Length: 544
Ligand SMILES: O=P(O)(O)OC[C@H]1O[C@H](O)[C@H](O)[C@@H](O)[C@@H]1O
Image (cartoon, rainbow, N blue to C red; front, top):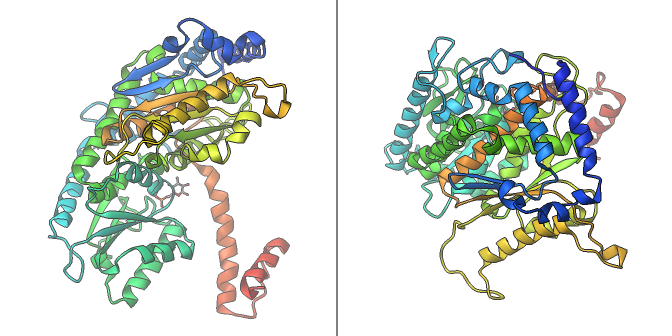
């Protein structure tokens, strides 16, 4: 696989293109390139918006023009990004540092059938897992599988962290309406107050615990598993009667000698942050919302995957979003990107994309280990609108500028009684604000009073989806996944490894040993800890 990309220009044509893009960005310093001017050009809106199957993206308020876009498309071609995306769906090794394929797209049926990888029929294996999920959930919903005291399960708690919870939590919050079958809670953090909050919210007699960990070695998840098991035992409930596991084949959790109600496989060729369409999302979402809802969600993901595979460059929505993101980071110099969904049901989208994007693209070397010309990635953050407007939008309008993805939903989830305030419904008020913010950021407004002056020229994209049905949410999730992967391929980095998270874990292990030694021997003085750690360990143990 050719790893060359904009940040690893191991190719004279890419080097040259990088220079052209740098020069093209300089044009935007001229007054004629202010968004006020760009937006008044005929055809700006229609030429700078795309749609597919109810998913609409308007990038007319991004600081790009045809010249910049055509250069960015060249970067796609020189790095073979779309070709690599297609190879990814066909089980090619796109994760070279771990010598693995990345087959999250196969989990929703995208790619050839049969799809062979390391002598395994990937889709058939996934189908088996999904059938098991369907049967298990039906038995729980019918009360055939029930709690130790014979009552039906009414709640479930996911014990998992990072990719083993964030995507699932996002989709659950997006889709959970009044007709949910079970309430879902999440226990990601090793923080004991996370545990305390969960047990305050559940009925211990009717709660199913879902342990999700690909490696089954993640410290936080294992500590929480131990905490929950110890707690259940003291309540007289055998953990095995209230627990299921989702883990990789051959992990320490894939152990027939430690029985649980049921266990489901996740696969090593699907990374945690890409895993919500596997059993990681499949089991909790099917328990909470029904297996049919999960299938419809997968269908939405697949519609977007197919759009990426089949659309030409100029019509390809995730590709265009990836190119604009690269443009904003590398050439326009913006320090961060915000995701602002105008619906509280998408409140956990930005935390999910934070992991998806920052863990995938926060790299300092190319896919083959060569130093990059500059570190890759950017900071992603976000809150739902209009809340965000009343918190950090001052900075967006007059302080350091950053591009924003505004996300609007045509139909809200709640369709009951809607009061009218100032002549509009709450949902319409939400939309009035979304449109106003994108307009105000782009156009600005001049004032003689410098404190009240708005320069404008601040970029944003508006994305709209039809509703909060599973298909629409699936398309949104898959859009951000594809955007992230394509961005990685264009830059020349590996979007599927995450070695950057390891050092902190190793150092936590050393500190943990110091703590354990003190727990064993109260006179132990943290002999092996650094001067600084010594201070904090004394603080913790002496509770000063
Ligand atoms: O599923 P697990 O093996 O428990 O991993 C959970 C998470 O922890 C790791 O540190 C990684 O940073 C994440 O990518 C991963 O999703």
